[in-house]
Structures are given as structure tokens and as C-alpha cells.
Image (cartoon, rainbow, N blue to C red; front, side, top):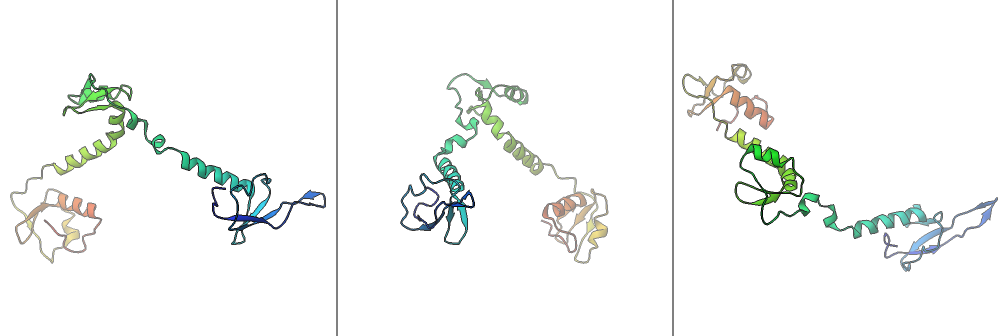
Amino acid sequence: MGVYPVLALEAVGSQHATAGHLQPAIIKFNRNMPPNALQGRPDTDLVELSSGKRMKVGDIRRLTSIAHKNRTTAPKSLEPQALKLKPAATGGIAIRGKNDLQAAMQRPDSETVVLPSGKRTTVGMLRLLQPQVEERRQQLRVANKPRPDLSGPAVRISAGTDWYALLKQPDSTVLETAQGKRITVGELKQTLANSGKQPVAAPHIR
């Protein structure tokens, strides 16, 4: 019995007729049980654990079957199909731009594509990686977004600045620290939103 490999069972009761009904046997665990201890016993027999809890033999058989199935399931069989596909050594759809990519994504997963770098992969792998690629592209767009014009007049900030009032100013308003560093109100709002902080004190401006 795979679920309890080191325990043994001892029948302390047997099926007997009482008032016209067949009563299940109650079986206790001990530590000298042979692997086939439950073989031939009806599913309705009860197994009493050391804690006093009882389980039906049928339930134990089902748990054992599930555990055995999980052990024998090959990890490779759980992989996405796209990981099992291999690109062809020759040929394939050349990806030179957005239109080529969109056209390739309409093809079957098994077809080969050639990326601008020369690397060969499959349409299925492109589909599998597309969410991560789009997320990375979004991060790069945000990181590469040009900063607004910080020249011209600016509002000097200090430890006594009323941040709540300041954040009501237009997003284009330029702020300047005592060290000469500048940031717009819009950038400051975005920084606070990303950090989850509230402007109860002077934010750290880099």
C-alpha cells in the first residue's frame, strides 16, 4: 500500500451479521504490515490510524492510486507543447519587422521563424514568450520615455513645503531642491504612486 509503506495493519474486528446488516471490520495499523495487507478486503472495511481516525479501505485505495499516478507521470508530459517543438535547420519565415511578426503569428505552432538576430525558433515558442516580450517592451518604453523640459522658472522646495498644496499644481510645474535637482509635479506624482507613499513628508528626489 503505497500511501503507508512502513505500517502494518491488524484486524481487530471482522464482518459479522448484526440485525441483518454486515458490519465492516476495523483494522488497526502496526509497523510490521506486509505490502498486500489490504488485498482482498472490501472497500467498506475501516482502517484505524494511530490518532484514532478511521478511513475506509476504498478511500485508501483511491489515494494510493492517485499517488502512484503522480509518481509515474513523466515531468516532460506536463511541459507546454511549444517547448517540445524544434525549429527546422533550413528555411523558415524571416521576421524583419512588425508586419512579418503578425503574419507569422497566424501560422501553425510547428512552423519555423528566423529572428532578425539569425536565431531560429518556432511560432509556438513565439506565442509562449509573447506576454513576457510585451511586458519587457513596455518597461523599456517607460524607462526610455524622455523627461519633460526642466528649464525655466521652478518652485523651490524645502522641509517646510506644503506637499499637499504643491501636488495640486499642474503636472508641468517644475520643482527644485536646495541642491539644484529638478523634477516636475507629474514625475513626482508618478514616483509617489509607484512607491505607494503619501506626501506626508518631503519625498526623496534623486
